Amino acid sequence: MATIIENCIKKIILDNGYITIDHFLSLVIPFYYNNNNSLGRAGDFITAPEASQLFGEMIGLYAANYWLENSNKKVSLVELGPGNGYLMSDFLRATSHIKNFHESIDEIVLYEVSLKLKNAQQNNLNKYLDRCIWFDRFDELEEYTRDRHCIFIANEFFDALPMKQFQFINGDCYEVCVILDKLEKFDTKPLLKIQTDFTDRDGIFEYSPQSESYLNVIIDSIKSNNGLLLLIDYGHEDLLNISTLQAIQAHKKINFLEHIGAADITYLVNFPWMQNYLMKNSMTNELMFQKDFLELCGIKKRSEYLVNKYGADKKNIESQLKILLSPEKMGELFKVLIVKN
Image 1: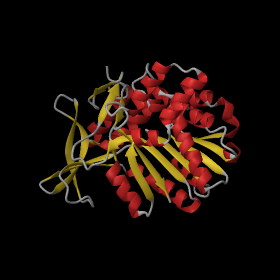
Image 2: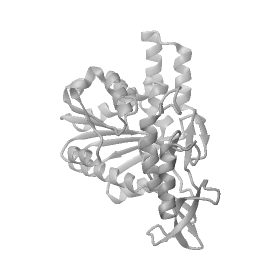
Image 3: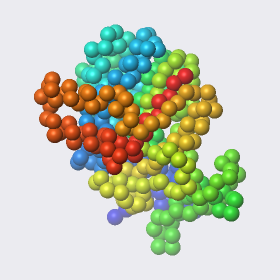
C-alpha cells in the first residue's frame, strides 16, 4: 500500500510530468526522520557516536585543543544534525577536565529539524540543558553564527541534504528527474536540458545547492570570528561520474525508489567539489580518512586508558575500534574535512 509521501510525490509527477531529485529528497528525507526509528541497532543504520563513545571523545579533544591553541575566548559549540545527542554528550564529558574550556562555552547549539530526534537529544544532554539551544531554521542558524566564535561539528549531516543530479550526454547537460513509467512505477530519467557551469564532464555529476548554502554560513562565521569546522561524512575523494544515491533499510542497501519514506536515502558527499569551493573562498582545509583522524587524536591510547583505568571490557573496546578504524568498516569510507581560516 502506498504511503502518504509516495502519494504526494505521485501527485506532483502526475501534475508536472516529473519531480527533480532535490525536490524529491527535500520531501522524503524530513518525512523519514520524523516518522521512523532511524538510528541505532533497532533502526536502519548506526552512526559512529552510537558505535562507540570514543568517537565523540576524539572530536571533543581535537576541538578543545584547537580552542586552547587559537582562541581561549568565549565559544559556541554548533552541531548540525546531532542525531540522538551522543556525540555532543561524549564531547562534553571528555573535555570536562580541560582548563577553562567548559567555562568558556557560551552556548551549545543543536541544529535539528526532527522533533523525534530533538526529544532524544534533550534526554541525552539533560546535564547541559541550561546551556543548550535548538534551531530548526536555516535563517536562525545564519543569524546566530554570524558574529560568534563557533566550533561547528557536522557528522553525517551533509549527506542528508537534498542534491541535484546532472547527466551529460553528447556534450549536453540534463537534470535527472524522478518520473512514473507506463506501469506508474517510480523511475529516473535525464529529462531537463539545461545550461550549466559544470563543463567538460562525462556521466553523472551530483551537486547540492543546500550544501553550498550551509558552507557559506560556516565560511562567513569562521572568517569573521576565527572558528573551526569538523565535517565527518562518507563520500568520495576522487571525481566520480556515477549516481551515488542509495537507501538503507534495516542496515541493508536498497534502491532509493523502494519503500519511499520508510528508508534512509543518502548519497556520497562530493568532497572534491567541496574542497574546491572552500579554496575559492580562501579557506584552509584538510581531508583525511576517519581512521587517520581518530588515530591522530589518540583514540588507541584513550581506549587503553578506558580498559586499564575504568575496567572497560577489552573485547568490546576492540570491537568498537574495528568499526571506527577498519578500512572495510568506517575507517576509510568516512572522511574528515577540517576547515579553518
